[in-house]
Image 1 (cartoon, rainbow, N blue to C red):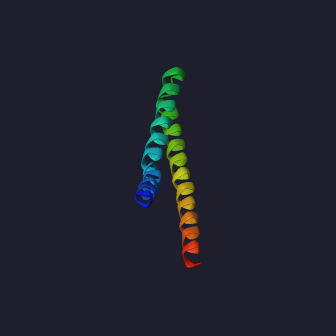
Image 2: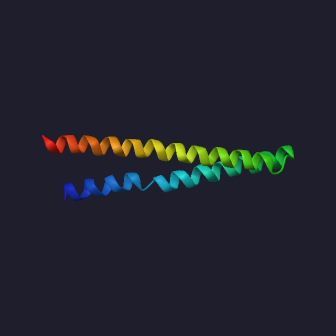
Image 3: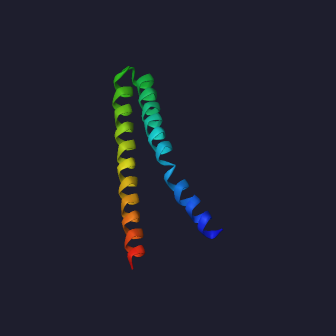
Length: 81
């Protein structure tokens, strides 16, 4: 049971990647929309902050992929002992 439970949590930990990506884009778009309404600069703030959200999402994806690769390498090293 313990092995199955730890495996399930291992996969759940990585299932958040898509949510992080989507939330980064949504938050960026929301900030841009709000600033456009406040400053009257439509659509420039929306475009700028949307691009910032996409960049933040890909940065998060990259960091998570690096962490996964590191954990996989550590698991391989422990398995070969």
